Image 1 (spheres, protein in one colour):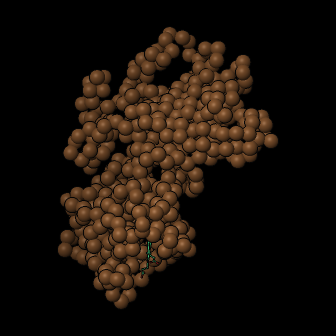
Image 2 (cartoon, helix red, strand yellow):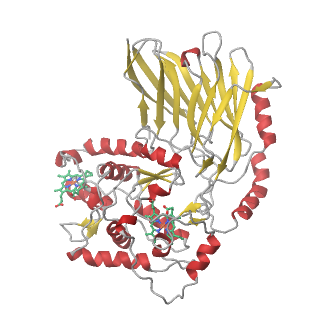
Image 3 (cartoon, rainbow over the protein chains, first blue to last red):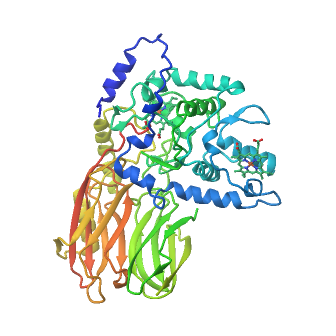
Length: 258
Length: 106
Length: 155
């Protein structure tokens, strides 16, 4: 394993001239690796254990919510009797009704407001995390496969732009860490390729399940940049770019991460 | 906030030592953490877990803040008779939850 | 009270040790118990009774990626019969904010003196387990784990 101290990483990264625009160097398909590959055997074992993986507490709860009926409105199950196998692996996608890009959380809330007469669930609320995890888990093992053509293309560009733009006091882009320096040590942590295929994921650091956007906010905060608010359209676009960049990688929510 | 996952064998032979697992959804907030504004996040933990087999206490545990969030326990008991295993967990304020699993002993 | 006293010192030590300001507020307050606190906890629980080393096996991963959740298994060498069994297992830390981590109460009906859970560890340390037998005798075992609390915790 390549070992580089934070100092080294930061120096080598910031040594590049500031005006230089990072090229879009995507990771070749045969080198794509899930964040799982960068965990210790113990943490991998926790993710693999269908009983002990704490993420399943949320999956279980999501299943109950999916079936439960709020007032006179139909349950999610009523309209989605055949389950939602493989669906999460195709998100984010354009909302056929508004034409806007939505992620899985946005889709769940759209169904609540449009089809159940219920208010949207707050980001990171136990209920939204649980429903998201329940649906995401049904794509477990499916290859990530998003559509970035047509009207989705501008969103992809927006996500790409966010990914390669340097930000924060550390003046680092996502690209620099996750495309150019993956596999290297960053102060006790190993930088992965930065894929979203495990989310919602149980992070030991959070001691809870959390959404992909919570992870993005952590990365932005990590470089001392102001994170975007939950649900921000730019983060949804970043999710799309991440999924396109991870195209073909297997979905594995609920993953366990450091 | 009272979800539990239980792994208890459906059937066992009399005298067999069976493994039991319980995973409880709970933040186990230690009381040693600070929030974003520097305020101490108050302690909120489960303090007691008990397993009764047809009414008899076979295993119990007292938790302190150093038991990890979403606590998991693996322990054992001797399969003695067909019946119920009752799991009960209580938080620091005395609020309690319970769940039952049945086992058939042959 | 003891915690308030050690807080400042340990906080400083932690900051120095991590060598950077990339620390977030969600970190536990780094107030640690010490070996002396562990001994005090032992005395509170068992008075001055003799604790012999042996019969207790503590298993932890050699390296824990994150101190928030470290798998712990304790096995005690005991037949677990009506006349010879482990009454309780006590888990102690020399470095957490509180020395007592948890207690497991066993009975002859437990069948096997083998328990597992996941614990919090604020730093590298040797976790100690003490088993109290039904005749009142006490045995202990311990194991050390290196905790690489992802230093750059935000990331």
